[in-house]
Image (cartoon, rainbow, N blue to C red; front, side, top):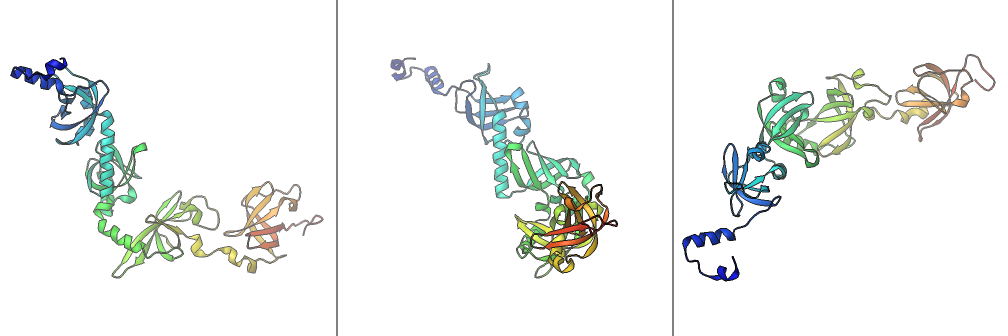
Length: 365
């Protein structure tokens, strides 16, 4: 149609409709277009894309994003990619593969920021928690974020619907972490937030071990409030269990054990606790306990290129330098040995030891 023809008044209704049709947008293969959902069926989605025709999501394009489409409603705005400019029925065929991920994550981010409750379906249960379906994606509820009531019947959760809130999102790794407890025990959580405000680093509490893991133990403590005592739980990392080196926490501690703990860190609503620091640093009294020339017994705990470390008491080790060990004398880990104190340096937490020998070579006591 040339410019002269387009400036003339249309001579008939057919010419008017044809001219209006020609002025509408045309889309090219691969183009991204935005549209509003105007019809949704079990097999297709139709969008108003403001073009020559309506946008259609159907067949393979529908099936590959049907988990996403389940949560799409009439009136929603979506961005699709043109995969067929115009099919025989006159539709512009779209793919929502790229759009689905962006749309869902924007929705998840909004739900997280607004703290809204979401209904999800439990897919399977493992010792760490519950895997759920959330808007077609996999989400995870850690065991620590399940309320007490629901936690008693974990084996029966598969297939059940749960009310949750989002507590962590990571789009790059498709990570969605949820909390059922934030819904079912929201009143308890609010009380715990208030109790957390009165806890200070350095405070010492009596507590009870609730969980024993390879990396440490969880301890429940009670914080006095105006009308009641509120329970908080914190982690004692394996490095904070004892002044002496330990293998596995389960070899020393059990669920239900009563322990004294010291608060060593408060961060983002989490408590880091220490059992060994609640006992006090054994090096504080080392200078009073161990005097030069004093003889005592210890246990070999480690060998190195420059000597052998001997534990005198939990948390207190001394070194027998290699030059103080006679040729041919073998000291193995866990050996009990007789030693004498040569030098004590409590500031640097260092004790120099000599080996007491039954046969005394020249230069040895």
